[in-house]
Length: 178
Length: 266
Image (cartoon, rainbow over all chains, first blue to last red; front, top):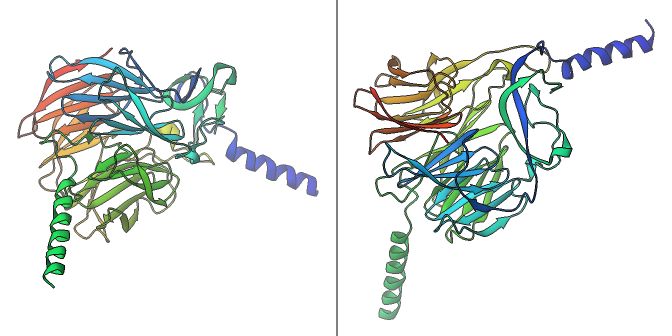
């Protein structure tokens, strides 16, 4: 067997480990979809309540619920009466998946930064501190594929904006695999 | 001499006075009776206790000093592995759930976590995404769930694990696996005394009696909705369940029977 053939076989066998989906991707399958953000990814704003889509983490403080809209921000819910809870505001924090509340301060990730936000008045929030690149290991901005993940995902289309995160969803014949 | 004594006495009383100001790092997390401390679900990655903010990033356990809450200062950062998922604190014991290991730390007098043990879930590499942990003083409860598509490894081998694990943690330096309970697709979890609540991804929430850790009994199951994480509000005997695009609330009685209160979808 020539060296060339051996090399060819090695390359083929290696590539089968990394590139070929071991599952037949036909029709719908669970995978990850990139979340795009158009605009300034470091801008944190208070907004009227918005639709629930992919809810993530939850934090309760007193009569209020703080529910993560994965990669987009935090819904604030008045739960004084658990029979009729209602949304009062949405804090837009691009890339946010991790946060907690301490008194009247939200600590949250804003893509790769850690920010502290005063929420004494949820309609007039104030960013008080930003620790840049606190989560730099994530490298959100340049991501073309989901980190630390094996599976199928929707290929990134950079014309749609900056990828600020990934969300689990049902994909229709995804073309990308990792 | 008297002056020095008076001075020392003054310093001592100042220290006592200052100590009484802080909320105390020995306070058990999750106690919302006073309404001032936040309570998180089991997928939490950030928790504040007194003047410390603990953060789990993808790979590191980070301690911040928040003596001035508006000016957090990083005081310690330790790299663990690249698959960290969740953070839970019970008293002075800190737990980090990851895809491969259960990390247990003792929080020292300066509020810095010191490693007590690292317990691998599997003998061989086997990635199980999103594995939260909660614990009381004696037992740590871990859910391991692997969606089929996510555990196909680089060479196409598929491993499926969907279970609750109970570790005896009386000796946090030597956790001991004492029971495994098969589940459908377990996600977030929480407990109140002898009741353990587990989200089953697309199939609602289950309640188990955990009085006997070797004989876990299913008490109630409110099925057929997306359930990702749960917060147990012990004072009110109430559950908050988040999944998909809805927040559900339940009341539970002392036997663990669930009564639906409301659902919020926008």
